[in-house]
Amino acid sequence: MKVTKPLWLFQISIKTCFLICIIASCGTDPRQKEFFLIESEGTKLKVETVADSVTIPFGMDFLPDGRLLVTDRAVGNMVVINTETGEKELLQDVPKVIGKGDGGMLDILVHPDYTSNGWIYFSYSEGDTNANTMVVDRARLDGLKLIERERIFTALPYYKKPLHHGSRLVIKDGYLFIAMGEKTDLKDSAQTLNNHLGKVLRIHDDGRIPNDNPYLNTATTKPEVWSYGHRNPNGLALNPATGILWEHEHGPMGGDELNIIKPGLNYGWPVITYGLNYDSTKVGEGITEKEGMEQPVYYYKPSIAPSGMQFYSSDVIPVWKGNLFIGAMALRHLNRVVIDNNKVIKEERLLTDKSWRVRSVKQGPDGYLYLGVDGGKILRIMPD
Image 1 (cartoon, rainbow, N blue to C red):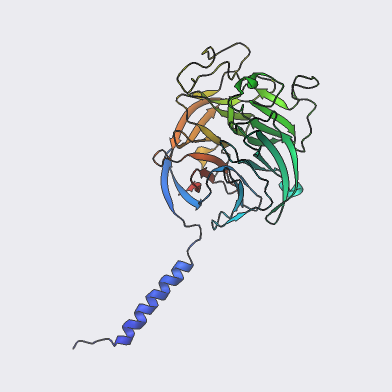
Image 2 (tube, rainbow, N blue to C red):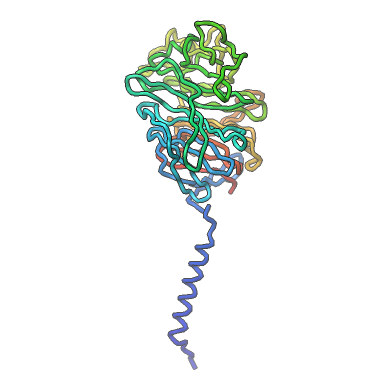
């Protein structure tokens, strides 16, 4: 005899399944977001979307509580991102920027001793289309407000075109290093010491001039200059294993450079370069070497348009420990550089199929590698 279940039992079963699905959904880890897998050195890794809608995420750094500070260059915003939920909040009382050309809100840096002093450093373009430059301020946070903001550096001279601000920041042993571009039209200024253009600069973290900088006590030099002969530095990073300061800069058509920065040295632009002018003519005499000028550790031809740079120091992804990561905008990938004895011995190009302009790279306190890509995505790379 066939037994037929009453209709109300089927209704209860359907409702029970529906409730189970809701409960399971509510219990899902909030970090389970859009992701895909990649492989590097035989290790599978997950690339996960953390947040979106940050137009040009030029600079990134982490607060001690794990929140991520991001600058949105052309818009001129500073965004605070909860990396667990993806929630974004705007900082208030942010200075106005000139968002033309390469200008806008540029790099951002949380002081290594933030828990004791509360300082956040940021660079941006100030002025208008008649005269502008790159400046560096520092401020503290009160909730979502910038307070106690003070100017600690202004790159001189001002110039009409808002191009080649460079603008990366690093703090080492209480000194602030600032990378400044040569404003394109003023490229010869990179070879003279009476200005800040085409230079890496060093000041105390409160803006004072160190008394052991290489160019002091003369009327024809800027005392902040640490090294010179740079074109448009878009990467500055300390190797935590050695304490050595590395820099990368855009070449013209070809000739992007990776350099080790030392005080008082001349890195050659525009006298020597491995690139060409954008009309394919020679830059200057078209030479790549000259006595008294430094050779790059590594150079790219064709250009990758490097942006952002980070040494990876965590054990979370062991095969990457000690590697240098560089964002590539022109060739649209993440560049992994293996370094041994300060020489590049291997290079791997990741995310080449995504066509992303990787703008910024930062290691998080969780040991994951975070990327900012033009068009809005903030991503993290983590073990699968």
